[in-house]
Image (cartoon, rainbow, N blue to C red):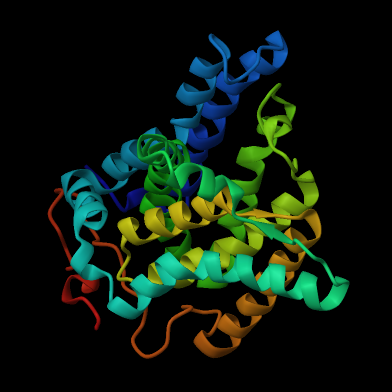
Length: 302
């Protein structure tokens, strides 16, 4: 196994190879219900939706093995299951930031526009009276986005991008790829059209691009924890599903998020999005597949 060869010789396979799965696999599967004009939440369209979405997961695992071998897979597994590597203050950010941003967006809508109902908790209230439905909704939110996507985006690809570029540049590159990955969903019958407020594609892409910086910020300060970004992603998606913002409040939320990103860049710095020590690095593996250096995140910051 020559895990670092592709990076060191400049071929960039560790970067673009992942896109063969994340975009190549996904878009091939997703093109079928688009061309066939199938509803994506009905059979057989839903099969192509789910299997296609797994391209990011497959890419994360396959590329981790191709580039890092057994050591890389072990490292990925630890980052998926070790909750103790997430410092308490970053766990609060992980679970509380997106709900706080939604409330901030609603607050701005009230102050600026005089909105009377910029936010509705009706979906959450309805589910609180039905524990089984609530558990099913939360499980669906978790499995159909955060869990399978983050194994690829942050579990594999972000590390490879940050080995070459600054944290900010890596975030923007990942954000652009992430936004493009979602693009076919706008062409599918029954996907975004089933929402009460279907997102506008350009604004949606900008929101993803901005959010990608916050994901890297959390990831780099939570000792490369994939579990942390999975739960962060889950908190964001659950907030969007259970707390309905008006279109205006939703846009204000993006504005507030953008301001927060500028503050983060100013205070934590664009190079690492982390103060103090350099950001944790992935383990490097030699040609024999042996670990050459220890992942510094194994020390776990407080």
